[in-house]
Length: 167
Ligand SMILES: [Ca+2]
Image (tube, rainbow, N blue to C red; front, side):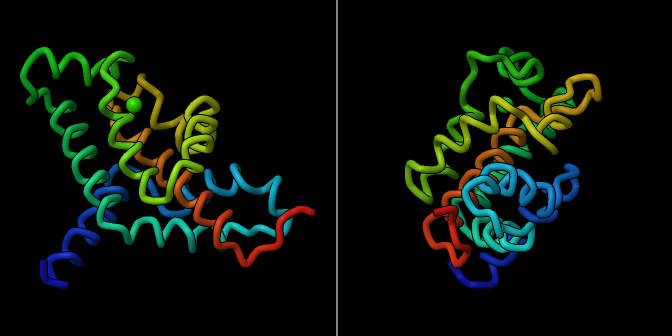
């Protein structure tokens, strides 16, 4: 694929995230939340840098575009049953939203999995808004995608860190 097409994909993925109310800063705050106890000198700027690197990966962009597209179609009621109801309700047994999250986490190996599980349970920051069902918005895929990007950035940070860890 040509460079120009790749840039279109990355640009769209970033635009769509913003359009759904998710800023790089919001994801970086989740990464910070995950790693601050291990790296006392960690800054939000460090986390932003790692989130940006994760967002530059094609696998991650594909996950963002696919997930947000399905969330949007669900909001508009455009999917066929039984998928429409499953996604609208964010049904626990569906599980494919988590598979998309795994495809993002896999880019950086298995360490991201623990981090992802942790924030998926805690739902700090932006994740609590994405999980708020009272808004009428559908973020069945996006909550997992955002959690996975934050967890992947945390793994990246832990692996090639220029920040000194707690001894
Ligand atoms: Ca979900």
